[in-house]
Amino acid sequence: MRINKTVTKYALGILRIEYTGNIDFIIKADRLHIMHDFKAGVPRTAYKGVVTCFTNGARLFLVPDRRYVRDYDKQWVVPKKFGD
Image (cartoon, one colour):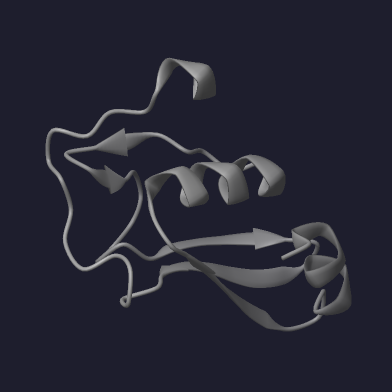
């Protein structure tokens, strides 16, 4: 998914973007310039895995795809190659 084009296209509304795992979340969060930190295997600021933010005037929801993200590994940490 090309996030930049998607966000621009829906700049006046609400947008849902699904992520398929922790690495996918980090990649999409970085493209959207939002925090990609994790605590206990869950993205920070998330409620039930859903992270909300505003970008270009649009409300954006980063949502776990429940076909792939069913539970969280509390021991998972962000790999060093994705460091801040």
